Image 1: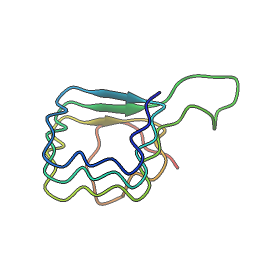
Image 2: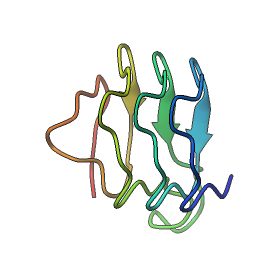
Image 3: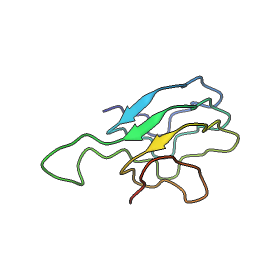
Image 4: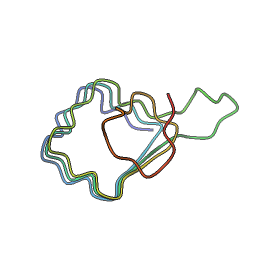
Length: 87
């Protein structure tokens, strides 16, 4: 449950970070180390609430090795994921 909407995280070391129910819309994640990071959701009574949203995030050059993605909004089809992506 974090709010990084529009944040400049370019080049940041976010290795192993857990983004659960986070707003990362329009965040700059270029060249960031996101290896083994988890992008997921918070389980609530409403299946649409608590989902991580990465709509419009910039990913060029990001290290996405071992990343897991589950029920994330806006995950680009061109990016790798080792989990289930929906939305």
